[in-house]
Image (cartoon, rainbow, N blue to C red):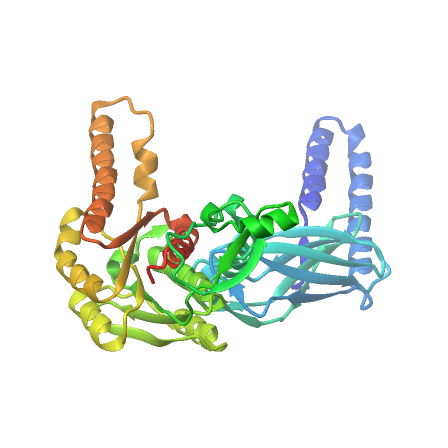
Length: 440
């Protein structure tokens, strides 16, 4: 009877019976009634056990997983149920989730009529890449009496890998190539000049350069028409990720490196859709993954696999290695999107000479992060003198980050300071801006 469990209702009724017998100790007339009630309760429990533990009382269950889970996104998991018995069953479900999810209170409840099918859907948000192993599915069945539960343990081991955010990648692709994306967060940038070949005449949409209006076509169509110019293609764009300890800082459960990994996948997809060549390099105290820039269809899969296998390191970043990468591994002038993090002006000043050398050879974009927790603290209302002091320090920290951006720009280095959750959007915006301005 290891699969028999007593319910809360059982103990509630049992407690009421104990109280009834306690009262009958002082009022002997109640003793016989208490005994009859106990006999009825025992008969009800026995009847419930006999009904539930018949061989034909069981529920089939199947877990439906996607082929891969998407890092930092809400992923839907489905449990398909089929009541194969002739009883109406209340069902409590405990799915043995991967340990990485750190969820120990999982419980879903439903009920099914005889021969009825149903589906339970729940969501998980993984914050680490790697293999996630699901275990058994435990079903606890009870009847309308609800005095006991019968456990069905379905051994249903499954493994699913967690890859960088494919969901986010697809969302940004839709927004980047949608005509109404101007209103949804992706910037439409006007060209500074038209050094590219004429492609076609199209309808004017908000964000198009008014200098490209074709007045003859406008007169014929009675609606604004503009000349569209074809972007230069096959430009090399490298995403370089610093995977040193400065990128281990977590925000909303996700490390800065994983934010950078999600962003790299999203922008690599946009780069390839724009017919440029996407590449990837990671580094810390040594060179990590390298994927040479290419524009062929399988390139995104190569980048995805390389990102999936990357691990943070506990060492300091060696920017001399970064310079070697820029000089030896990256051939020809390229756009370099460097994901890193500076927590002080001193840290930036140490790296600035190398960044300046790289910017003379390539178009360098330095992408680093706002500390959103410090920003939240800096905007809070404070009362004590100590809190005022801490808030002043926080405000100085925020101001220093802004000064870093200005300092990089003063040396001709493109810079993006962003909240971690806005990283992918702001990075794609920067790429589209530079491409539209003809700087790549």
